[in-house]
Amino acid sequence: MKRDADLCQRIERLLAMPEYQGHPLHEALGQLWQAYVDQSARLERVTHISDRYQALAKERENDLDERFRKQLRKLEKLARISDHYQRMMQDLNAALSDASKRDVLTGLPNRRHLLQKLKEESERSARSGRPFSVAMLDIDHFKQINDTLGHAAGDRVLAGVSRILESSLRENDLCGRWGGEEFMLVLPDASPDAAQALVDRVCQRIRSHAWAPDNPRTVSASVGVSTHRPGEHYSETVERADAALLEAKRRGRDCVVISPD
Amino acid sequence: MSNLTIPGSQSTPAINGDWETGVLTMSGDSYPENSFDLFNQVIDWVERFLAQTQKPLTLELHLLYLNTSSVRAVMDVFDLLEEAHQAGHEVAVNWHYDRRNERVAELAEEFLEDCSFPFSIIPHD
Image (cartoon, rainbow over all chains, first blue to last red; front, side, top):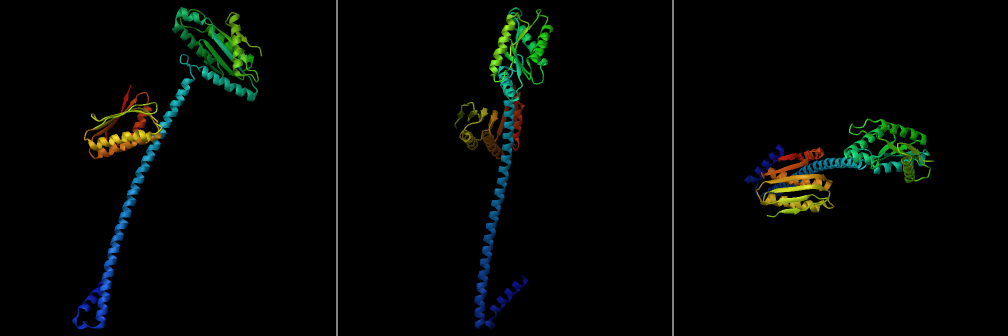
Protein backbone atom coordinates (compact mmCIF):
# COMPACT_ATOMS: atom_id res chain seq x y z
CA MET A 1 0.00 0.00 0.00
CA LYS A 2 2.85 2.30 0.94
CA ARG A 3 4.45 1.65 -2.42
CA ASP A 4 1.16 2.31 -4.26
CA ALA A 5 0.71 5.63 -2.44
CA ASP A 6 4.29 6.64 -3.21
CA LEU A 7 3.84 5.78 -6.88
CA CYS A 8 0.59 7.78 -7.08
CA GLN A 9 2.29 10.86 -5.57
CA ARG A 10 5.20 10.50 -7.94
CA ILE A 11 2.95 10.27 -11.03
CA GLU A 12 0.92 13.28 -9.94
CA ARG A 13 4.09 15.24 -9.33
CA LEU A 14 5.52 14.32 -12.76
CA LEU A 15 2.29 15.24 -14.56
CA ALA A 16 2.26 18.64 -12.82
CA MET A 17 5.83 19.55 -13.82
CA PRO A 18 5.78 22.22 -16.57
CA GLU A 19 8.97 20.95 -18.31
CA TYR A 20 7.19 17.75 -19.47
CA GLN A 21 4.12 19.55 -20.88
CA GLY A 22 3.66 18.85 -24.60
CA HIS A 23 5.78 15.67 -24.55
CA PRO A 24 3.88 12.76 -26.22
CA LEU A 25 4.60 10.51 -23.18
CA HIS A 26 3.12 13.16 -20.86
CA GLU A 27 -0.18 13.07 -22.70
CA ALA A 28 -0.27 9.22 -22.75
CA LEU A 29 0.61 9.00 -19.05
CA GLY A 30 -2.05 11.63 -18.27
CA GLN A 31 -4.75 9.55 -20.00
CA LEU A 32 -3.56 6.32 -18.37
CA TRP A 33 -3.58 8.05 -14.97
CA GLN A 34 -7.15 9.27 -15.44
CA ALA A 35 -8.29 5.77 -16.48
CA TYR A 36 -6.62 4.35 -13.35
CA VAL A 37 -8.32 6.87 -11.06
CA ASP A 38 -11.72 6.08 -12.63
CA GLN A 39 -11.24 2.34 -12.30
CA SER A 40 -10.19 2.69 -8.65
CA ALA A 41 -13.31 4.72 -7.87
CA ARG A 42 -15.50 2.14 -9.60
CA LEU A 43 -13.86 -0.73 -7.70
CA GLU A 44 -14.45 1.15 -4.48
CA ARG A 45 -18.13 1.55 -5.28
CA VAL A 46 -18.60 -2.07 -6.31
CA THR A 47 -16.93 -3.24 -3.12
CA HIS A 48 -19.10 -0.97 -1.03
CA ILE A 49 -22.32 -2.19 -2.69
CA SER A 50 -21.23 -5.79 -2.37
CA ASP A 51 -20.48 -5.30 1.32
CA ARG A 52 -23.94 -3.91 1.86
CA TYR A 53 -25.51 -6.88 0.11
CA GLN A 54 -23.51 -9.22 2.26
CA ALA A 55 -24.52 -7.38 5.43
CA LEU A 56 -28.14 -7.61 4.37
CA ALA A 57 -27.90 -11.32 3.64
CA LYS A 58 -26.19 -11.88 6.97
CA GLU A 59 -28.86 -9.94 8.80
CA ARG A 60 -31.54 -11.97 7.05
CA GLU A 61 -29.78 -15.16 7.98
CA ASN A 62 -29.54 -14.12 11.62
CA ASP A 63 -33.18 -13.15 11.58
CA LEU A 64 -34.21 -16.47 10.01
CA ASP A 65 -32.03 -18.28 12.50
CA GLU A 66 -33.67 -16.46 15.38
CA ARG A 67 -37.13 -17.16 13.98
CA PHE A 68 -36.27 -20.79 13.42
CA ARG A 69 -35.07 -21.17 17.00
CA LYS A 70 -38.23 -19.51 18.27
CA GLN A 71 -40.46 -21.79 16.20
CA LEU A 72 -38.50 -24.79 17.36
CA ARG A 73 -38.93 -23.79 21.00
CA LYS A 74 -42.63 -23.31 20.38
CA LEU A 75 -42.94 -26.67 18.67
CA GLU A 76 -41.16 -28.42 21.52
CA LYS A 77 -43.47 -26.77 24.02
CA LEU A 78 -46.48 -27.71 21.90
CA ALA A 79 -45.41 -31.35 21.74
CA ARG A 80 -44.73 -31.43 25.48
CA ILE A 81 -48.12 -29.99 26.40
CA SER A 82 -49.93 -32.13 23.86
CA ASP A 83 -48.28 -35.30 25.17
CA HIS A 84 -49.28 -34.30 28.66
CA TYR A 85 -52.91 -33.90 27.55
CA GLN A 86 -52.80 -37.32 25.92
CA ARG A 87 -51.46 -38.93 29.08
CA MET A 88 -54.23 -37.27 31.05
CA MET A 89 -56.79 -38.61 28.55
CA GLN A 90 -55.36 -42.12 28.77
CA ASP A 91 -55.48 -42.09 32.57
CA LEU A 92 -59.06 -40.84 32.48
CA ASN A 93 -59.96 -43.58 30.01
CA ALA A 94 -58.39 -46.20 32.25
CA ALA A 95 -60.31 -44.87 35.27
CA LEU A 96 -63.51 -44.80 33.23
CA SER A 97 -62.97 -48.32 31.94
CA ASP A 98 -62.36 -49.53 35.48
CA ALA A 99 -65.48 -47.73 36.76
CA SER A 100 -67.61 -49.16 33.94
CA LYS A 101 -66.69 -52.69 35.01
CA ARG A 102 -67.47 -52.28 38.69
CA ASP A 103 -70.67 -52.51 40.68
CA VAL A 104 -71.10 -49.28 42.65
CA LEU A 105 -72.65 -50.76 45.80
CA THR A 106 -70.33 -53.72 46.42
CA GLY A 107 -67.23 -52.66 44.50
CA LEU A 108 -67.22 -56.08 42.82
CA PRO A 109 -66.96 -56.59 39.06
CA ASN A 110 -70.37 -56.02 37.46
CA ARG A 111 -72.32 -58.08 34.95
CA ARG A 112 -70.49 -56.47 32.00
CA HIS A 113 -67.14 -57.54 33.47
CA LEU A 114 -68.44 -61.04 34.25
CA LEU A 115 -69.66 -61.50 30.67
CA GLN A 116 -66.25 -60.45 29.38
CA LYS A 117 -64.58 -62.94 31.72
CA LEU A 118 -66.98 -65.72 30.62
CA LYS A 119 -66.14 -65.01 26.99
CA GLU A 120 -62.38 -65.04 27.70
CA GLU A 121 -62.61 -68.25 29.72
CA SER A 122 -64.65 -70.07 27.06
CA GLU A 123 -62.08 -69.06 24.44
CA ARG A 124 -59.25 -70.17 26.70
CA SER A 125 -61.00 -73.42 27.44
CA ALA A 126 -61.47 -74.07 23.71
CA ARG A 127 -57.72 -73.63 23.21
CA SER A 128 -56.47 -75.54 26.26
CA GLY A 129 -59.23 -78.17 26.50
CA ARG A 130 -59.45 -77.50 30.24
CA PRO A 131 -62.93 -76.77 31.62
CA PHE A 132 -64.05 -73.87 33.80
CA SER A 133 -66.93 -73.77 36.22
CA VAL A 134 -69.58 -71.17 36.91
CA ALA A 135 -71.32 -70.78 40.26
CA MET A 136 -74.49 -68.74 40.64
CA LEU A 137 -75.06 -67.68 44.26
CA ASP A 138 -78.26 -66.16 45.61
CA ILE A 139 -78.77 -64.86 49.15
CA ASP A 140 -81.72 -66.67 50.76
CA HIS A 141 -84.78 -64.64 51.77
CA PHE A 142 -83.05 -61.40 50.85
CA LYS A 143 -86.37 -59.64 50.26
CA GLN A 144 -87.36 -60.35 53.86
CA ILE A 145 -84.10 -58.85 55.15
CA ASN A 146 -84.85 -55.72 53.17
CA ASP A 147 -88.50 -55.63 54.22
CA THR A 148 -87.97 -56.25 57.94
CA LEU A 149 -84.58 -54.62 58.61
CA GLY A 150 -84.52 -51.93 55.93
CA HIS A 151 -82.52 -51.42 52.78
CA ALA A 152 -79.40 -50.24 54.62
CA ALA A 153 -79.21 -53.61 56.40
CA GLY A 154 -79.81 -55.33 53.07
CA ASP A 155 -76.97 -53.35 51.52
CA ARG A 156 -74.68 -54.36 54.40
CA VAL A 157 -75.48 -58.02 53.78
CA LEU A 158 -74.64 -57.58 50.08
CA ALA A 159 -71.35 -55.88 50.98
CA GLY A 160 -70.54 -58.56 53.58
CA VAL A 161 -71.19 -61.43 51.17
CA SER A 162 -69.04 -59.62 48.60
CA ARG A 163 -66.07 -59.48 50.99
CA ILE A 164 -66.49 -63.20 51.82
CA LEU A 165 -66.58 -64.06 48.13
CA GLU A 166 -63.54 -61.94 47.33
CA SER A 167 -61.46 -63.47 50.09
CA SER A 168 -62.42 -67.04 49.15
CA LEU A 169 -61.19 -66.92 45.57
CA ARG A 170 -58.11 -68.43 43.99
CA GLU A 171 -55.81 -66.19 41.99
CA ASN A 172 -57.50 -66.42 38.59
CA ASP A 173 -61.08 -66.71 39.83
CA LEU A 174 -63.48 -63.83 39.39
CA CYS A 175 -66.59 -63.05 41.34
CA GLY A 176 -69.07 -60.32 40.59
CA ARG A 177 -72.58 -59.08 41.20
CA TRP A 178 -74.83 -60.53 38.53
CA GLY A 179 -77.81 -58.44 39.66
CA GLY A 180 -79.96 -57.89 42.75
CA GLU A 181 -78.84 -60.38 45.40
CA GLU A 182 -77.32 -62.73 42.82
CA PHE A 183 -73.57 -63.22 42.53
CA MET A 184 -71.54 -65.16 40.00
CA LEU A 185 -68.22 -66.89 40.39
CA VAL A 186 -66.18 -67.80 37.33
CA LEU A 187 -63.65 -70.50 38.24
CA PRO A 188 -61.03 -71.32 35.58
CA ASP A 189 -59.57 -74.84 35.55
CA ALA A 190 -62.08 -75.95 38.19
CA SER A 191 -63.68 -79.39 37.93
CA PRO A 192 -67.21 -79.79 39.38
CA ASP A 193 -65.65 -81.25 42.57
CA ALA A 194 -63.17 -78.42 42.99
CA ALA A 195 -65.95 -75.88 42.37
CA GLN A 196 -68.19 -77.57 44.92
CA ALA A 197 -65.44 -77.56 47.56
CA LEU A 198 -64.84 -73.84 47.06
CA VAL A 199 -68.54 -72.98 47.07
CA ASP A 200 -69.22 -75.12 50.19
CA ARG A 201 -66.54 -73.12 51.98
CA VAL A 202 -68.14 -69.84 50.87
CA CYS A 203 -71.59 -70.97 52.10
CA GLN A 204 -70.12 -72.04 55.43
CA ARG A 205 -68.46 -68.65 55.89
CA ILE A 206 -71.68 -66.80 55.03
CA ARG A 207 -73.64 -68.91 57.53
CA SER A 208 -71.15 -68.39 60.36
CA HIS A 209 -70.38 -64.74 59.64
CA ALA A 210 -71.12 -62.38 62.53
CA TRP A 211 -73.59 -60.06 60.91
CA ALA A 212 -74.39 -56.66 62.43
CA PRO A 213 -76.20 -56.70 65.81
CA ASP A 214 -79.29 -55.25 64.12
CA ASN A 215 -79.44 -58.39 62.00
CA PRO A 216 -80.44 -61.26 64.30
CA ARG A 217 -81.31 -63.66 61.52
CA THR A 218 -78.89 -66.11 60.01
CA VAL A 219 -77.87 -65.31 56.49
CA SER A 220 -77.47 -68.18 54.06
CA ALA A 221 -77.09 -68.67 50.34
CA SER A 222 -78.17 -71.13 47.67
CA VAL A 223 -75.80 -72.00 44.87
CA GLY A 224 -76.04 -73.64 41.45
CA VAL A 225 -72.82 -74.81 39.81
CA SER A 226 -72.19 -75.85 36.22
CA THR A 227 -69.04 -76.81 34.36
CA HIS A 228 -68.50 -75.63 30.83
CA ARG A 229 -68.96 -78.38 28.20
CA PRO A 230 -66.65 -78.42 25.19
CA GLY A 231 -68.32 -76.58 22.27
CA GLU A 232 -71.00 -75.09 24.47
CA HIS A 233 -71.70 -71.34 24.34
CA TYR A 234 -70.97 -69.76 27.72
CA SER A 235 -74.57 -68.51 27.95
CA GLU A 236 -75.68 -72.16 28.08
CA THR A 237 -73.22 -72.80 30.92
CA VAL A 238 -74.76 -69.86 32.77
CA GLU A 239 -78.28 -71.14 32.07
CA ARG A 240 -77.39 -74.53 33.53
CA ALA A 241 -75.92 -72.90 36.65
CA ASP A 242 -79.11 -70.88 36.93
CA ALA A 243 -81.25 -74.02 36.61
CA ALA A 244 -79.14 -75.69 39.32
CA LEU A 245 -79.64 -72.64 41.53
CA LEU A 246 -83.44 -72.93 41.07
CA GLU A 247 -83.17 -76.57 42.05
CA ALA A 248 -81.23 -75.60 45.21
CA LYS A 249 -84.00 -73.12 46.09
CA ARG A 250 -86.61 -75.81 45.46
CA ARG A 251 -84.80 -78.22 47.77
CA GLY A 252 -85.20 -75.77 50.64
CA ARG A 253 -82.32 -73.31 50.13
CA ASP A 254 -78.95 -73.09 51.96
CA CYS A 255 -77.44 -75.78 49.76
CA VAL A 256 -75.33 -76.33 46.65
CA VAL A 257 -76.60 -78.13 43.54
CA ILE A 258 -74.24 -79.27 40.79
CA SER A 259 -75.62 -79.30 37.26
CA PRO A 260 -75.15 -82.73 35.64
CA ASP A 261 -72.30 -82.84 33.08
CA MET B 1 -66.67 -2.42 19.58
CA SER B 2 -68.22 -5.85 19.37
CA ASN B 3 -68.71 -8.87 21.57
CA LEU B 4 -67.62 -12.35 20.62
CA THR B 5 -70.09 -15.13 21.39
CA ILE B 6 -69.53 -18.71 20.32
CA PRO B 7 -71.77 -21.27 22.03
CA GLY B 8 -70.02 -24.39 23.28
CA SER B 9 -70.57 -27.96 22.14
CA GLN B 10 -69.31 -31.34 23.22
CA SER B 11 -66.08 -30.81 21.27
CA THR B 12 -65.73 -27.02 21.41
CA PRO B 13 -65.48 -24.62 24.33
CA ALA B 14 -68.03 -21.90 25.01
CA ILE B 15 -66.32 -18.61 24.13
CA ASN B 16 -67.38 -15.20 25.29
CA GLY B 17 -65.54 -11.95 24.64
CA ASP B 18 -66.95 -8.88 26.38
CA TRP B 19 -65.58 -5.75 24.72
CA GLU B 20 -66.99 -3.45 27.41
CA THR B 21 -65.37 -5.18 30.40
CA GLY B 22 -62.36 -6.56 28.52
CA VAL B 23 -62.96 -10.13 29.67
CA LEU B 24 -62.58 -13.13 27.39
CA THR B 25 -63.93 -16.40 28.82
CA MET B 26 -63.37 -19.88 27.40
CA SER B 27 -64.88 -22.95 29.10
CA GLY B 28 -65.03 -26.65 28.31
CA ASP B 29 -63.24 -29.22 26.18
CA SER B 30 -61.65 -28.36 22.86
CA TYR B 31 -61.14 -30.90 20.09
CA PRO B 32 -62.91 -29.26 17.15
CA GLU B 33 -63.03 -30.61 13.59
CA ASN B 34 -61.55 -27.38 12.37
CA SER B 35 -59.75 -25.58 15.13
CA PHE B 36 -58.38 -22.87 12.80
CA ASP B 37 -61.88 -21.65 11.93
CA LEU B 38 -62.80 -21.58 15.59
CA PHE B 39 -59.67 -20.00 17.03
CA ASN B 40 -59.13 -17.53 14.17
CA GLN B 41 -62.24 -15.75 15.44
CA VAL B 42 -60.70 -15.62 18.91
CA ILE B 43 -57.33 -14.43 17.64
CA ASP B 44 -59.00 -11.77 15.47
CA TRP B 45 -61.04 -10.53 18.40
CA VAL B 46 -58.00 -10.34 20.71
CA GLU B 47 -55.94 -8.56 18.01
CA ARG B 48 -58.71 -5.99 17.43
CA PHE B 49 -59.22 -5.44 21.14
CA LEU B 50 -55.51 -4.89 21.76
CA ALA B 51 -55.17 -2.61 18.73
CA GLN B 52 -58.29 -0.53 19.22
CA THR B 53 -58.47 -0.04 22.99
CA GLN B 54 -56.19 0.78 25.85
CA LYS B 55 -58.41 -1.13 28.28
CA PRO B 56 -56.94 -4.05 30.22
CA LEU B 57 -57.71 -7.50 28.82
CA THR B 58 -58.29 -10.49 31.10
CA LEU B 59 -58.68 -14.11 30.00
CA GLU B 60 -60.77 -16.33 32.25
CA LEU B 61 -60.06 -19.92 31.22
CA HIS B 62 -61.97 -22.97 32.38
CA LEU B 63 -60.49 -25.36 29.83
CA LEU B 64 -60.26 -29.12 30.38
CA TYR B 65 -59.09 -31.20 27.44
CA LEU B 66 -57.30 -29.55 24.49
CA ASN B 67 -56.21 -31.36 21.35
CA THR B 68 -52.91 -30.43 19.72
CA SER B 69 -54.21 -27.73 17.39
CA SER B 70 -56.15 -26.17 20.25
CA VAL B 71 -52.98 -26.12 22.37
CA ARG B 72 -51.28 -24.32 19.50
CA ALA B 73 -54.10 -21.78 19.19
CA VAL B 74 -53.98 -21.04 22.93
CA MET B 75 -50.19 -20.58 22.68
CA ASP B 76 -50.75 -18.14 19.79
CA VAL B 77 -53.21 -16.14 21.88
CA PHE B 78 -50.68 -16.03 24.73
CA ASP B 79 -48.03 -14.79 22.26
CA LEU B 80 -50.33 -11.90 21.36
CA LEU B 81 -50.79 -11.11 25.05
CA GLU B 82 -47.03 -11.29 25.65
CA GLU B 83 -46.39 -8.85 22.78
CA ALA B 84 -49.05 -6.47 24.11
CA HIS B 85 -47.65 -6.76 27.62
CA GLN B 86 -44.14 -5.90 26.35
CA ALA B 87 -45.68 -2.85 24.69
CA GLY B 88 -47.23 -1.73 27.99
CA HIS B 89 -50.79 -2.97 27.52
CA GLU B 90 -52.30 -4.41 30.70
CA VAL B 91 -53.19 -8.08 30.19
CA ALA B 92 -53.75 -11.07 32.51
CA VAL B 93 -54.72 -14.74 32.42
CA ASN B 94 -56.66 -16.58 35.11
CA TRP B 95 -56.63 -20.32 34.54
CA HIS B 96 -59.28 -22.01 36.69
CA TYR B 97 -59.26 -25.71 37.51
CA ASP B 98 -61.15 -28.22 39.63
CA ARG B 99 -59.13 -29.08 42.74
CA ARG B 100 -59.82 -32.78 42.08
CA ASN B 101 -57.98 -32.62 38.77
CA GLU B 102 -54.43 -31.47 39.56
CA ARG B 103 -53.34 -32.49 36.05
CA VAL B 104 -55.05 -29.42 34.60
CA ALA B 105 -52.99 -27.22 36.94
CA GLU B 106 -49.77 -28.93 35.78
CA LEU B 107 -50.76 -28.24 32.18
CA ALA B 108 -51.47 -24.59 32.93
CA GLU B 109 -47.97 -24.42 34.49
CA GLU B 110 -46.51 -25.57 31.21
CA PHE B 111 -48.37 -22.88 29.29
CA LEU B 112 -47.17 -20.30 31.78
CA GLU B 113 -43.49 -20.80 30.82
CA ASP B 114 -42.26 -17.90 28.63
CA CYS B 115 -45.17 -15.68 29.75
CA SER B 116 -44.11 -12.60 31.70
CA PHE B 117 -47.60 -11.09 32.10
CA PRO B 118 -49.69 -11.89 35.23
CA PHE B 119 -50.78 -15.52 34.97
CA SER B 120 -52.73 -17.11 37.86
CA ILE B 121 -53.68 -20.76 38.25
CA ILE B 122 -56.72 -20.84 40.48
CA PRO B 123 -58.27 -23.94 42.07
CA HIS B 124 -61.97 -24.23 42.83
CA ASP B 125 -64.07 -26.92 44.53
